[in-house]
Amino acid sequence: MATVRVSGIQMSVGNKKSDNLPRILQHIQESDCDFIVFPEMSLTGPNNDFSDSRTLEAWDQIAAACRVSYTVGVVGTGSRADSITYIQSRIFGDDGEVIGTHEKLIPTESEREWCRPGSKLKTFEHQGKEITFGCLCGNDLWVAPGFGPYPDPRLSHQLGERGVDIIFHLNASGTDSSYSAYYEANLELRAREANCYIVTVNAAVPHNIVNVPSGVISPEGEWVAKTQVDGEQKFNYDIVLD
Image 1 (cartoon, one colour):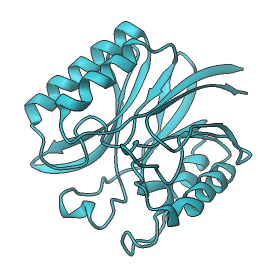
Image 2 (image 1 turned 180 degrees about the vertical axis):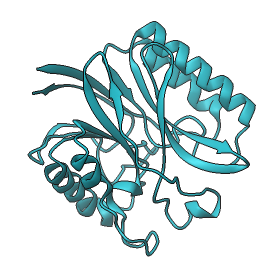
Image 3 (image 1 turned 90 degrees about the horizontal axis):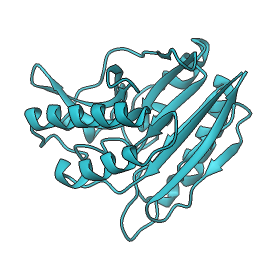
Image 4 (image 1 turned 120 degrees about the vertical axis):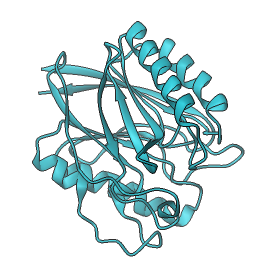
């Protein structure tokens, strides 16, 4: 059996790396876990207005912090390739090397005005813990009504079929409470369908409450860790895998 300690950082996300990067680095430096997970676009902010060169420099700083703290960092960021912008989950290994990236496959209608969907659903390995995991960003998991008429490929189910132990869900769902029941039910039912843990980390909204908490959902579809929905929050949870 393997025990994997995960930390989720429900932090507010500014529109500039200069606002976000110091807090990401501080959380990594203070971490005592195997995986530390941040919200969707938590480095660059939810926009297309970021410097490629300074983003690369920030990635290098995060990689160095993960190496020193010996933790895997799963960080939401914007990325660009051939002048095309993607919403990305970037996985920094505990050795400072990049394990891999997930590019958001189902951006919302408004996001598609400035980014392009990724092309491939991937799985990743943590050799030391001998676990397989996947990443999803926001709408990838629940394909919410009202955010574009897109078919639901049930990406969490696909990852479950590939045998992942954990899905890391980086999110920035906002404050519209009419979606709360939908989002929570999706997390519970999709964890049960995929028969794996889902670790979901939302972006906090200053002076407001978000419409779904951060936390951990078990393969039985139960919340085994759950934050408050107001303000910045942090959780730690030990996942025991058979």
